[in-house]
Amino acid sequence: MVPWRRLHSQAWWSLGLICLVSLLIAGYADALAAAISETTPDLGPTMRFVVVRSTAPGCEPNCPEWISAEGTIEAGTPALLKRTLKTLGGRKLPIVVNSPGGNVDAALQLGRMIRKNKLDIAVGATMFYGCEPQMKNCRANDGKGAAYFGFSYASGAICNSACPLMFAGGTRRVVGEWAFLGVHQITTTYIRTKLLYRTTYRMVKGKKKILTRIVSRRDAGSYKTYEMNKPLERRLSAYLKEMGIDKGVLDIMKATPASDIRQIKPGDMLAMKLVTSLESVDILTEAAICRRSPAPANCKEIPANAKPAEVAAIDAKARPSQPAQVPLSQPAKVAPTQPVEAAPGNGAPEMRFVVVRGSNPLCNPNCPEWISAEGAIAPQTPQKLRQLLAMLGNRRLPVVVSSQGGDLFSALAVGRLIHEKKLDIAVARTDFVGCDPGEWSCLAKEGAYAGLTVDSGAACDSACALMLAGGVRRFVGPQARLGMYLMGQQQIIKPYLEDMAIGPGLFAALEQRSVERQLEPDLMLKVGLMTGPQSVDALTGATICKSSPKPDNCRVLPSASAEAETPAKL
Image (cartoon, rainbow, N blue to C red; front, side, top):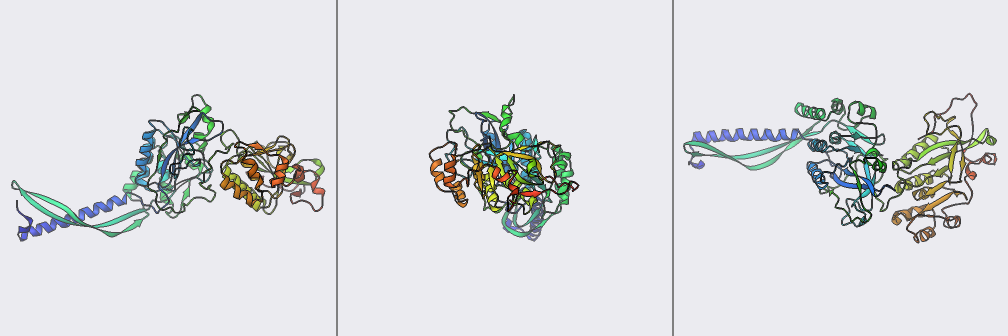
């Protein structure tokens, strides 16, 4: 062995050359590693995976379950999904993803893992009831057989940037018209690192053995590029081909600036095989799927006396959260502690808003018009009403509602919107004359459908009662029914009712029961939930337009030759 400190001048020169060559090679390797992975700005908390069981009324004991995947994709995210799948013991649950994007390499790993396990995937969000993933030691669902309950919805959910690469791994892939899937150019960050080596050699049996070790590492700066290099383009192209997806997706990615997001249209996604059908998340998570024979693999029957199950809830260490770049229509992630019935996709049709004109011939040519609101209140319901009101401009039409309830927070949003626009509201149903707006061939005339209002048999239950509370005038006729219970959300409902000038006596009455009860007219009048005992005719009757002054919802039809307005239907 020859100690390095005794090398002669020629050996020193050789050693310096070796150090220089080693330094250059190592520096180049670091830069190359950075070039093939996308780095992103802080897009919010790291993606977490949680197994969720449906709260749809009537689905127990056999209900659908799914994996909720929400947050930013990071380098460690594939390991979290792997742990989640391991806890399921081979059960194949669909993934409901809501993500702004993240790391490309991790997204590719996730996609391959999803495909290997033959899992379906949908773009959607999950509203939790009772325990939420971020809660510690939550016991709200003890005795119910699962740790997390909720329902999935498409409205406002996103899968952007690197997320579509993860999405591509699904066996069945659905987005739905109310969800968003978007792509853009990949931002690549090159990180320069300056390394200092110490290189020595030993003579072992007459042969020189070189020993090298790093003695220091220093950041030498970084730079970003938005141009996709050829190796990365080949990798992504090969991955999409592996997943059976057309390369047109890659072309859109390359053509969209990194500062923008290109939302891919449903028809284009189907043509490029990015989605397998134009259905939404409901096809994987609605309660009705478990009534099929055979039931899908994600249906699970839990006995009535079941104990809480060990359900996968895999979280990475949360980072400081920043506002996610999502549409304003996305519902707030606040979870009720108990389900509210009649969620759309679980047997009840989703609430629709239709402008209707009274068809009683006694009112012509000046007839009352109203907004018919019938069906289950869903996360997208507030946005639908907002769009219809925008179409109506300054016209203030009363709302005629018939609903068994639905999403609590959407009902609060609808109620506040009705209150903001100073609209009247009545519990009643609309009987359409001629044809029903749900029929494809049924067209509105002069911007409205023909119909009559009837309060007999109409109901406004649970969350619908909160929607009713937003009206300026609130009528529940003697033949209509209004039912309500506290829904386990006193801290949210009570301030809302105070804002709507509903008296505290309503809470005192409801606290005596834990189930829904029909409210008596005297009580509704006393607490202010109802402003009068009149029926819906006070807002839509044939003779109201003969009074002076005429109500805001009266309209004289233009001449018969006038061009029909665009049907107001959402």
